Image 1 (cartoon, rainbow, N blue to C red):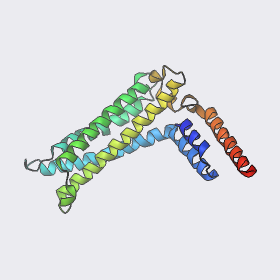
Image 2 (cartoon, helix red, strand yellow):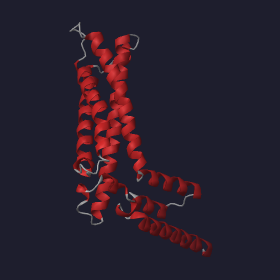
Image 3 (cartoon, one colour):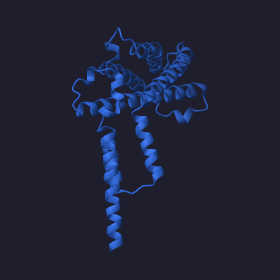
Image 4 (cartoon, rainbow, N blue to C red):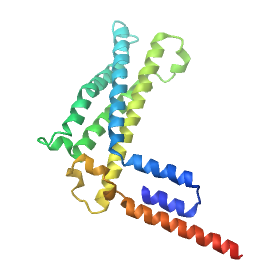
Length: 221
């Protein structure tokens, strides 16, 4: 990703502020802090989703005609997420237990939760495709809120999984064939992913050099 952005910069001149902004984005992408921010966001939205799903189930469980089956599924998945997420993240710090801190393990459980939230969101959206036409009813507002938080969690888990996968592939591309069994923190080492800072700086210097050559040729013309 860094190499791609650097190559694009070679072709298009940008201001110093724009370059600084993109550099900050790249630093944030490699930051391990972002991992915990994403996990904390998933946990927070899962808690909200669990309460909304529980309220939806308790409101409709006596009436089979309007019972929302997908809400029970989302309540189960969000409840599992609320309980399991702190445990899984906490175990990644345990040095005595190695496998929960491995990249392959984190990719695995994030992918599973992503698929579960995606399935629940799709099922709920399929059962109630025209929620905008009944927004004046409380039951529809509950379904809309449940669906919104379910999709938010799906997106966050997709971003977390994709980010870790891209960073791991970058390390693997640079010769770290054992990256999948390495500690998850190693995926955020900039020197291992997609060229690292040295290659990044090299491409920035190359961009500046080519841009200066183009400007010189324009002046000669």
